[in-house]
Image (cartoon, rainbow, N blue to C red; front, side, top):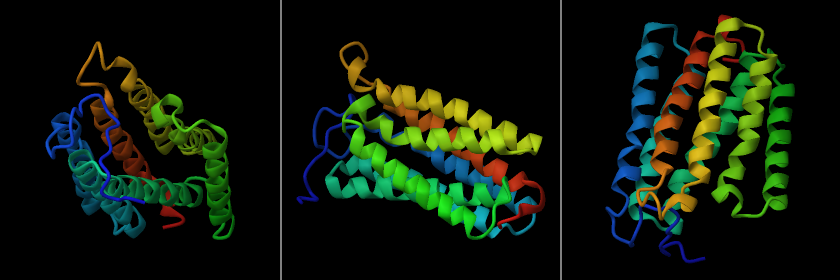
Length: 215
C-alpha cells in the first residue's frame, strides 16, 4: 500500500497542498478545547486516572485529525482513525464498568462483541454509504443503549445529550460530498465542531459518575 498517496474526501479540499482544508483543519481545535475543559474539571476532583487517559486521547484526536486534514495521505489517515477507535473502545469499557457496574470480565467481553458487530457492519454496508459515516452508527447505537440502561440521572442526561449531538454531527458528515456544488466549503467542519462537544459531554459524564466503579 502506498501510504504517501494523497486522499481527497471532502468538499473543501481542491488540491494536495498542506493548507487545502483550512476550516476542516482549524475546527479540530474543538477537540483540544474539550480536552482542556475536561482536564480542568478533572483537576478539581479526585485523581480519576481512566478519565484522565480518555482526556489525553481526546487531545490526540484533535492533533491526529489536524494532521490528516493538512497532510491528507493514506498514512496520515491513521493519525485520525486510530485515536478515534481507541476512544470509542476505551470509553465503552469505562461506561460498562462505571455506569452499568458490569464485572471486570463482562465489560471486556461486551467490548469485544461490539468490535465484532462493528466489523460485520463494515463488511455488509457498502463502503461509501453515508459518505463513510455508517461506520459510526454502531458507536451511536452503543451510546444510546448505555444511556438507556444508566440509572443515575446526571450521567444519563449527559449520555443522551451526547448521543443527540452525535446524531446531528453524523448527519453533517454524511452530506458533505452531496452539498459541494451548493456549499463548496462542505459540512465536514461541523462534524469536528459538534464532536468536540460530544467528547466533552462524555468526559463530563465519566467524571461525575457516582462511586467511579471501574476506575
